[in-house]
Length: 474
Ligand code: ADP
Ligand code: GLC
Picture 1 (cartoon, rainbow, N blue to C red):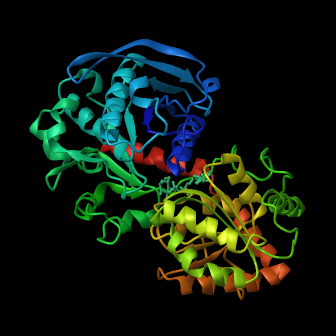
Picture 2 (picture 1 turned 90 degrees about the vertical axis):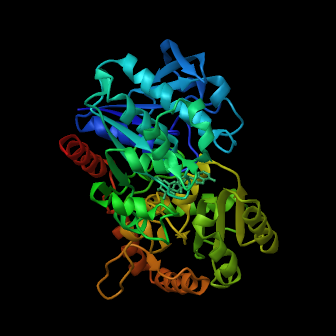
Picture 3 (picture 1 turned 135 degrees about the vertical axis):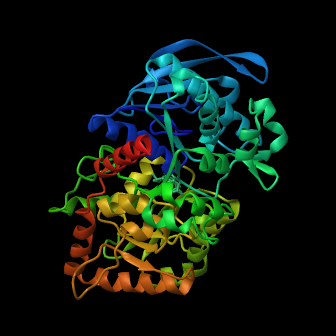
């Protein structure tokens, strides 16, 4: 089976969040179980030159906005699978990967270029695996061209939702300039008089998936559907949840080169060294008995920063350190900086994006806070489990599916989970975790329960293969 995975970001070429982790790892995991998978992604200004192995296609001539447009494609296997990176400087050489008013045009272009490139690469893929709103354009283009283009006739599309909150909206009047002139395309994109790339992907892709079982149900409700719940409900017979995996080549305390000492499920001594290192890096006193509560996150309302803000004083009163790595909404950045200024011997803050520090924090912290308002899957709680860092999460989406609340009687569970989106509920769990932390035997059990969970990509990749097969047959 031949599968083309298309994504706006993919590790190690580009990353702003979990989508990058997933798109980098999935094609490799698919290849490891015998699928002929390859990845197509943009070549950004941020993509490191060392990853661009050679030029695969030098003359990718496209028609764009009625004019000839010249693009290229680089080749790499830096993520462990064949990868083609579309090089179109006017579209992708920018200060940041997203955040421009014309993003819809940039990714419409990327999708068109990706499909044209795939045609140049050899036999048609059986499956084109599309990710998030950035790939809604390819869903429509594929559904249209396969009616008359024999190359695409048998290709089917799978559309994965990583986050319903981002929908890629723009004016319907822009569609003809992007090459979408049919009423089929207009209907697909039309969402209450605007164009939505997410809605188009959901509407016309052959099957839909999302990144956890619980989120697959949540997005059919008003609370989590961001206005598209009617469509996900209508297509629920073709929608499935597949929980993301962890790329153990990148996130494993036994081999991680970013951390000061490696550690293992049966020997956690290295974790204490990592804790010391983490405190040192943030110039905090080396008080190893105090728990470190940590957070690594995009600072958006999705991530429940508001609850941490409301509970901050009590979190510190509970007697721990608090370390945060994040960037995003200015309000939240200011709040974290003010918190550090208020308690410089107990709080460490790094505003910005720092891949290496994310590893150092996962390894050195005791407790990871992830009180998300909604969370399609969430990767950090899974990294935390693997690194013996006990997660406190809200029971939504993938957080609910991957974290089991600790039960001291049965000695089962690997973290702490609360329901209502309220600071006092988060605090209850913080105190519960603090209590368990004092009992060294119980704590080690919680850590080991988490470290032994098999969140490998192999499991997830096998489920995708089942989905691909089902898609081809139905
Ligand atoms: P989301 O994709 O919604 O941001 P996930 O938990 O799925 O949430 O994935 C987040 C990914 O981004 C993780 O790999 C995490 O380590 C990383 N990340 C988030 N913020 C930062 C940051 N400031 N610095 C480094 N890595 C970060
Ligand atoms: C999105 C979601 C996150 C998920 C990631 C990868 O960014 O917010 O929950 O883990 O995609 O699927």
